Amino acid sequence: MARTLHPSLRMNRNNTTNALELLMSQHEQVESLIEDIESTDDLAEKATLFEALADQLAAHATIEEKLFYPAVMDESTRELLVESTEEHLSVKRLLADMMELDPGDERFDAKLMVLRDQVVHHAHEEEEEQLFPLVRQLFDEDDLAALGNELLAMFEGLLEKGAPRQSVPAETQEAAQLG
View 1 (cartoon, rainbow, N blue to C red):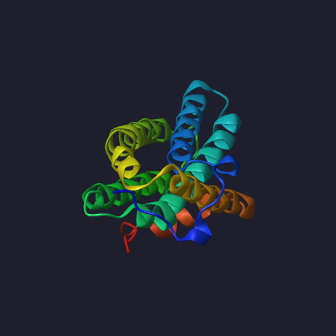
View 2 (spheres, rainbow, N blue to C red):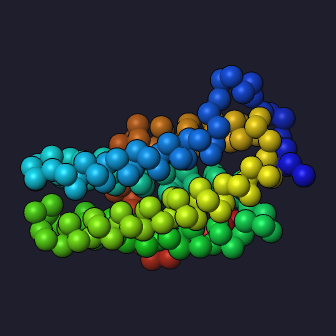
């Protein structure tokens, strides 16, 4: 049975972004940034690309932890959501470590490879293959569109404030709490 959001959150689907499509698009953007970092030998470009990557990952994790995961919490999704917050914690710890390193440090590239593997696993194997099909069963298209708008607004707001990556080191002690 599909859940419904409060009527005030429902919007015309033509003016919205489906939550799952938005998150998958962000997964692709993150993977593309990682590939760009891996393919450059220019240390200044690598540093700039890493800052963009860290901002994208920090903002993405925030919208998932604060909006998406609580919205899709259900008996059928709980275990995956708990695992997802633990995976976010691991990614944040890697990001915090990398923020302390010079992009020319050999450990930077090693950590980037580990980060890539964790991000790909989390995005594809956990979310896209397991969680998202469950969410599609729980929500109709209008609710996914309304949720997508909320996610996009928060994501854009975090990026507009500037450098969401700066909050990452303070978020490395424990996984985000699920309501």
